[in-house]
Image (cartoon, rainbow, N blue to C red; front, side):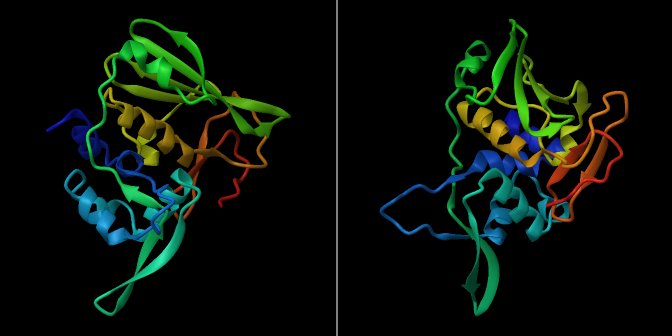
Length: 222
């Protein structure tokens, strides 16, 4: 069993699985096919046997919409019954190209900046679009040479398991790209005032995309 498979099993990391094993279907010559949520369950179950218990179909769609904003919801008819499906994505189940830890910084999306790069830790920073007290909030991603990852918002550690994201990655281009795609499911709630001396409060929508609130102000779930 490969490391990324262990990660999925250990952390129920369905968001990581979706980010790594699905991709945008950008074929301009062929009409994008429907992919049923049931087919996603079927393929994911080899890595996450209890995937249906973790997320219902609406939960899966909400995650996919956050990861791939261009997708659309559709219905696919199978055996005379309409089932929930999505358009605009395709399966990509092939293993990714291996990369060295020292080269990860070369493949970072342009929205992220390298804050620190040592032989053991790569620290990346992203300034939020949302404003708190008129200022953006820094999201920090730490990737270790031991393959472990950590996420911090306004200097506070975030439990990735709360967002169904694995706590480690494999050093492949596919896994790295999947990591950044999975982070799209994490958003800061609107209307809050930043008070860094107060505890984080996590607000979960009914459809499994969570927001991080930096005070006890109620968040607006989308």
